[in-house]
Length: 187
Image (cartoon, rainbow, N blue to C red; front, side, top):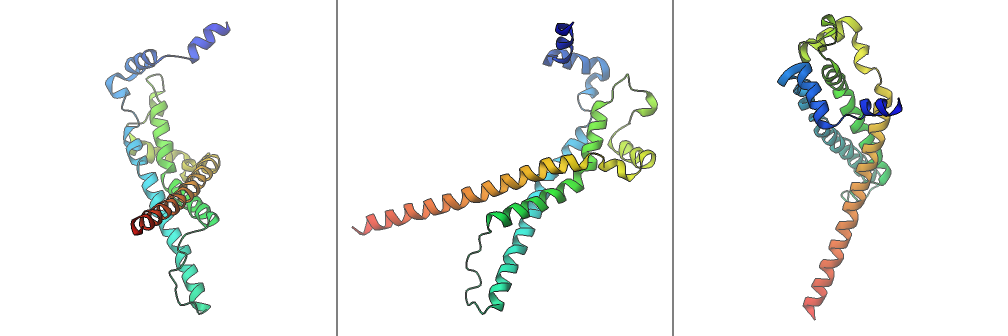
């Protein structure tokens, strides 16, 4: 019946929690938590890489100005939308390359259950890393990477581009408000 199939696939929170408890006890709720905590480093890496690439664009721009004999090499330090997009893309790609194997381990740990053959179960994150490398090879850590990278790189690039454009608009609006206040104070 379609109704029974729908009920199976649409479990509620309590039914899912009961299933996790029955399968792994209290520890079942914590499967994959170590890799999840490590994954928190992905946005930090992404931001650090973004700032590094953005600084590279700024340095290149200053160098070009110097070679053309410009006096004020700090003029127009803001990145263009395309530079922001490129810097954010490279940053997210770099962070994803580093953390993708951890994402795989987290997924594997969270998907195993008591029903999983004992020889296929992992004892934890380190065991999973070692066994995947030994049994499947290092390339196993990057299966599906292309799809994930496409999705996350594009999303991060758009987010950073929007963030930078909003920050520029806020800066301009604030400068206009400050100028109006200063003009009003002189009256």
